[in-house]
Amino acid sequence: MAEATEVRENARKVREGLVVSNAMDKTAVVETIDRVRHRRYAKTVQRNKKLHVHDEENTLNVGDRVRVQETRPLSKNKRWRLVEVLERAK
Image (spheres, rainbow, N blue to C red):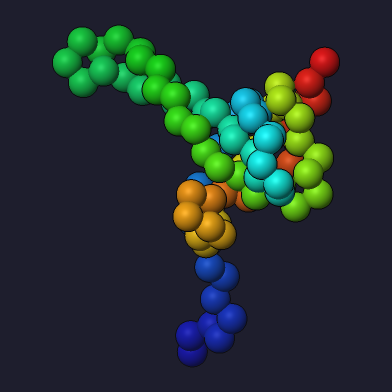
């Protein structure tokens, strides 16, 4: 007999990054750094990506290190939500 309550793996992406802007209401811009290996030259290359993150309580400040998770589209550009603040800006 097949198990009725199957556990489904959460396939949402999780990223860590640095807050670079909090000028918008309930939204922050987080820059993530992805280190990938170059296909031909085998050198490690850094790729930056700016993500628009939903910050419900407006608690983020520029310089905070945060963890964000992929979510359904919340606006035209916003597809990420705040999971936790790893480190506050000094």
